[in-house]
Length: 278
Image (cartoon, helix red, strand yellow):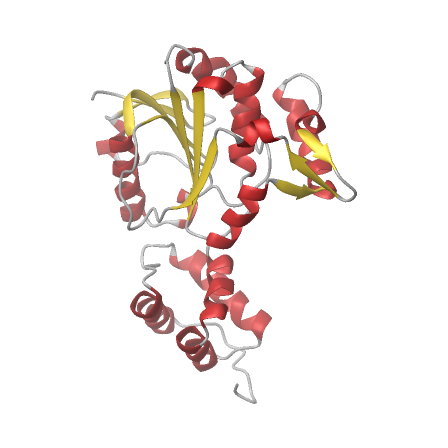
């Protein structure tokens, strides 16, 4: 590594060079991520690892293990159970009554990170007596966080912080009712894991893999440029059954006039939409 580390932040041409390098060497395309977010993440990696721009290029090419760390840092994994409790209230009141009319309910949580959103959905479905006819697919680009998701084991510190979210959803009991408490961690009950599947899916390059009654992709779009958002909206639209539901994060929205005509707003504040047409 360089003896002297360049303390300047990356320039736009350097970011472009890194995007092309990662695409060529590892097959991941970050060209449609918002440049401001990408720059912050890259600068952070260089600072934490004490790397110059040239060092960073070197390890990206020559150290496969480093790329996994790089991917975890670039693909922001901020998640929690029952994040935005009002959203889950709205699901319960405005979406689940309709979904309950289906013989089978398939839900896709895209960009699911370490699984907290998937298990939140599983708990909600259980409380509404819909578990037995539901199946939840959790996907992410990051293989390491998916390993955590499959285990369904979280620190007690996290569970305590999730307890308040659960309380505000209005669901009965406590969040700990759905976990087996161990010494310093809690494991989600097996019955909540039974109807879930976690797998790798790249929203940028992968295609439709099933038809769903509901898709949740919350707090992911904010990291994408408008053109990529529209490509992913097209993927979601084609993946939803007629009158299926799309749920975005509370800082996200459907901006495109083209897609506004393809989705009906169910709850503007919580960004819940319903597919129009077939």
